[in-house]
Image (cartoon, rainbow, N blue to C red):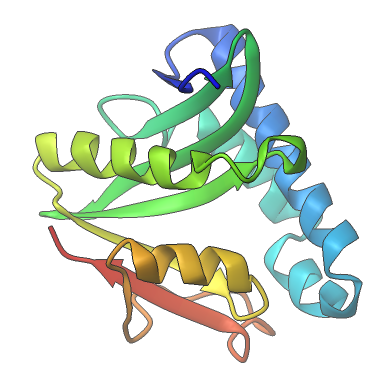
Amino acid sequence: MNPPDIREMTTQSEIEVVRMMVRSYVKWLFDTFPDETEDLGSYYSHERIQQALDEVATVFVPPNGIALIAMIGTEPVGCVLAHPIEPGIAEMKRLFVLPTARGRGLGRVLIEALVVRMATWGHPTIRLDTAIFLKDAISLYRKMGFVEIEPYTPLPSGTDKTAVFMERRG
């Protein structure tokens, strides 16, 4: 198996790829966790989904932030986004690997690439928020040195009981 190509989003077509990944991620969440529809609906309301899609081209492009795309051959199969939230600290968002590409370590590769890039930018500490029902993601984060922390940002009402905040210090 060839190693994935990790690309930094720089072109309009790559912005559209990341937006497609964000849409796929949200759809996957609702399809995979039907018992969590209330929580997911609070976090991913129509307005927040549109905001997330709009932010791809503003918050997650240099020098404001970064989006990385995992490619297998010519096919995009995953992404991860990050942006600085305070000096020395960046926030990781929307790590996602298409279900058809899982089991290849792509999530780990994306996180590793993101950690290196953010450290190069002067942000060695990475924070994230996730949901308690995303057990595979939490397991991966723990294996990569993330630990649970107190909330560092407010979340939409209704998500406080399922939110998990994590941090990896560089």
